[in-house]
Length: 199
Image (tube, rainbow, N blue to C red; front, side, top):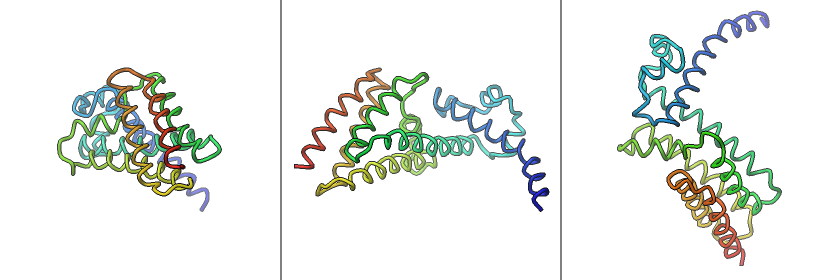
């Protein structure tokens, strides 16, 4: 039985690799160029995967985009939480979030937030792409709220919302204005909010 499972896994490996190659390429293209500029022709050319093979996994370009953004959401949130959680206390982790953002801003290939970018291209608030973007921001809020709830304060939800606005503002300033120090400015305001909430 174990040998059968091993054989099946080995047989499925090329299929998994092809699907991952499509998603990785789609994610990179969408992040660099946006959804509208990322057509099937470009995906085929860049990934090296035949159009027929892509349609074997995904019925439409929108399906490819949704799957790629879902994968990015999981990976980005895992990275962000792991890096932010390297600080020891909840308030230190909250402030560390802004240091983590600054490191991201300064990294090679930074093009802002993929979810803000793609949501800006889609007019319909009920479009699956917009809903993925909304879910991503909800996860970021939930993590921030989780940290705020570890503090001894009266309104953790209100503080979490303020912190999320600071983070989103810093991301936008970094992308639009090229001002990576926006993370530092946001961190300064976060310190004031923490002090105010604790008093």
